Amino acid sequence: MDFEWSVVVDALPALFKGAQLTVLITLAGLVGGLVVGTVAGLMRAYGGALMNTIAFAYVELIRGTPIVVQVMFIYFALPTLADIRVNPMTAAITAIIVNAGAYIAEIVRGAFLSVHQGLREAGLALGLPTWKVLLYIIGPVAFRRMIPPLGNQFIVSLKDTSLFIVIGVGELTRQGQEIMAANFRAVEVWSAVAIFYLIMTGTLTLILRITEKRMRIL
Amino acid sequence: MSIVEFRKVTKRFGQLLVLDEVDLAIEEKEVVVLIGPSGSGKSTLLRCINALETINGGDLIVDRISVRESRQKVRLIRQEAGMVFQQFNLFPQMTALENVAFGPHRVRGLSRLEAREQALVMLAKVGLGDRVHHYPSELSGGQQQRVAIARALAVKPKLMLFDEPTSALDPELRHEVLRVMQALAEEGMTMIVVTHEMAFARKVGTRLIFMEGGKIAVDGQPKNLLDNPQNPRLKEFLQHVA
Ligand SMILES: Nc1ncnc2c1ncn2[C@@H]1O[C@H](COP(=O)(O)OP(=O)(O)OP(=O)(O)O)[C@@H](O)[C@H]1O
Ligand SMILES: [Mg+2]
Image 1 (cartoon, chains in turn green, brown):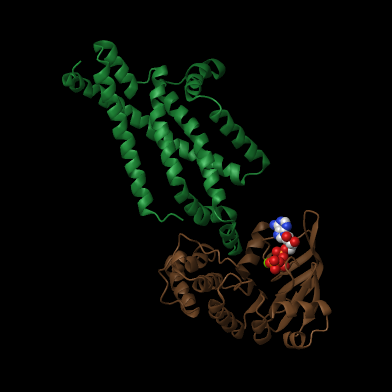
Image 2: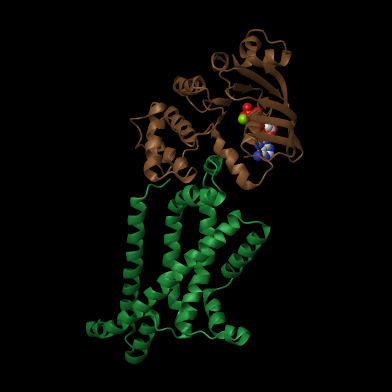
């Protein structure tokens, strides 16, 4: 068979639109995921018994179920259960927030706990409250250690958005699927889609590399 | 009124009794040297003073505040009792200058500029005026410990606690730290120092305390005790460290 370049060219506008949605879901999802993950991770690391248990239950619940099930639950089960109606886009972003948040919580917890106990004591001994010690002393050291595992999670989450095809979000994979259904050019369409994903994950990797280079790893 | 007063202070780690009804009063300008065998409770006694360890019994008053008071009050104690650790514990993401300016800015509320100026003065005082922009990883152990002393001093404490400040250092780097500590004592700083440096105890100390099994076994003049130890356990201990 021969590779029909015109198929790719014709598909480009739709694929670009899909890629935009993929980026949007990933960005919004990861920003939210970072907030949720940081809070849950700190609850795990420094919270009392109750906080710790709540965060632990959340992490286990999410890590123990597939993301497809999670987004199906948000999109199809929540309306029935709690009368919460969401559009596919909101469901997709929420799924990334909740899912990435659980994994990021473990990354945050691990990084904070890996910081030498002496730094915490040195901060407290100066007369600072604990939250300032975490914010100004432990946090910056922990953050540098989080960059490699966070990068990994960002890439996983970006690719996870392709699973939202199941709730009909018009992201990149969905666009590819629709074009394919119309022209049956599987090789051209899926090659193009794969390259779009590679460009996005490659950009992410590059940004993380640069961030890591700019920071002294401690 | 004593600056530090232990009243029958008890400290346990689980079943282990580490401080056993310790009574001790320390006055301003005293330089107390704390010695004793490993595990006798020296570090714990020191760490109770700035409430890094919470006491289980009795009371401990530091600068008129009890360590059993609210967290906010405890922070006031910590601001008045600077601490120097065996392992330095400098903030690795900050330069020497940033380490020292941190306390004045974040704890005492000085502006960044004022804090920086104060930090420069402190670093010059410990002989590191030419190393201010170095990160801890770029400094020798002796230099790191001097930065740590400057960091504690920058908060303007009334009292300084040292937990084996030279034990992690190579012998040839110890004297530079001990010299800074001696200068500080000569300025009239109240100091409590856990150390095995008997020469420092003799020359700089105004009081020597020998701890054993969570109790203060001997308390007196450094010269007298070092030249003529009456307590047999102290005598034996001194033979080991000498
Ligand atoms: N956080 C802790 N948890 C449990 N036990 C502890 C803790 N800290 C100290 N201990 C125990 O308390 C006892 C006294 O410890 P401390 O560190 O005060 O001794 P020390 O006199 O400073 O000894 P060294 O000369 O070895 O530093 C030791 O038996 C030690 O194992
Ligand atoms: Mg000790």
